[in-house]
Image (cartoon, rainbow, N blue to C red):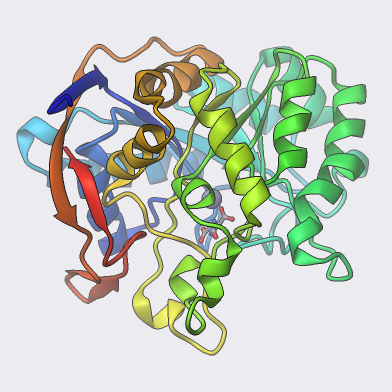
Length: 348
Ligand code: NCD
Ligand code: ZN
């Protein structure tokens, strides 16, 4: 049994860094495991233009400056938050900036801070989509309908039928990422599509099925969006991620909320996995005997899809039994990490 494995440094292709103290906190965990991350733009003041993206990037670099020297080589890959009024000029400016790598589509009211998200994609964003296709900038999609008549467990599959399939017909070469794919239907769509489609997969959607949210009581720390699905979907996601298929890559969707906002009569959606993301993914890959495919999923497929050079640095993961803490505190923040209380076999 190997005691350690060394892989090319991974990238997290879906990360919520937040701002202020939370930013300092999340960044410390992130840089230990990831060389780069796609930074989600859903702040309370959403990152809807290049100017805001550059300012947000500066605050991330500033926070990075506070971290110990050897942990500082990290590159934030910024994204723009698409709205009904985003212009093609804004997209071109983003591309020109050299620091924006993708545009994020939140259907209006689908998730945390999506109040400014898109109401009518085809009516209001066709020109922008055309530009994205032309300049080969990926569109990252939170693929869930926000129609409250649609059952929460069906929102991804309905979105694929109603939005992704027509989108693909209109824009055959648009690069799209189905973020945090959570269903068999989502994975099957990726399998059936051309080279311009990919998907990120989170640790929570592969570690747990929806029963965990209700196991012995209501457990808010397993509530995220897309919501966890049934066992059939979980197994299907694990198969896709661990298969070595280049269309699937690592995106934690690590989305921290202070414990007060999670343990609340209307708790926020999001799991915090930056604390131990690589150990969690290791567990998933080891359990199905596919450790040899972890590097492709974590370090190659994402970079290749985004046309970025693969990282040069490496990361060594050690066999080392450890218990995930119930809570991590930083300044006034208290965060419950994913897999709290569980014993993991690997650490970095
Ligand atoms: C994310 C957040 O809190 O920003 N929450 C989540 O449950 N994943 C938003 C998102 O990615 O949907
Ligand atoms: Zn997210």
